[in-house]
Amino acid sequence: MVKADKEIADLLGVDEGSEVNDRTVRLYAEDTVLVHARSLSPLERMPKTMRDQLMRADIPIGRILRSHNLETRRDMVELEILEGEPTFDGIPILSRTYKIVHNNHVLMWINERFPIDERWKL
Image 1 (cartoon, rainbow, N blue to C red):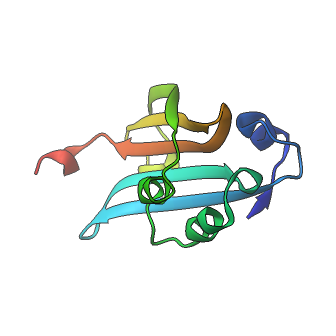
Image 2: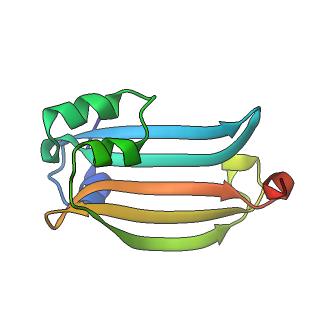
């Protein structure tokens, strides 16, 4: 949990000081990290049961959204290749940022990072 600073408030369309869930997740296959993801979610826009589920690290966001039958859309914000980032020790990464929107309000801001290397050759 964090209080929204100006940057986060602008991303989510909330007031500065609003409570926001700041969640970072790494998805693994055995010992290999495949995805690094960060999400920001304004708690004031969520039903209590959804907030409770979001606080648990073991439930994927997609499953949480489906379980609440919310009509949402994903608005792509940015798609880029980044180099020299520390996320994967300097390996180039594909970064995608999008917002999940419900009732014309940002429900979640998500940034996902995928390393561009040999780990995808299965």
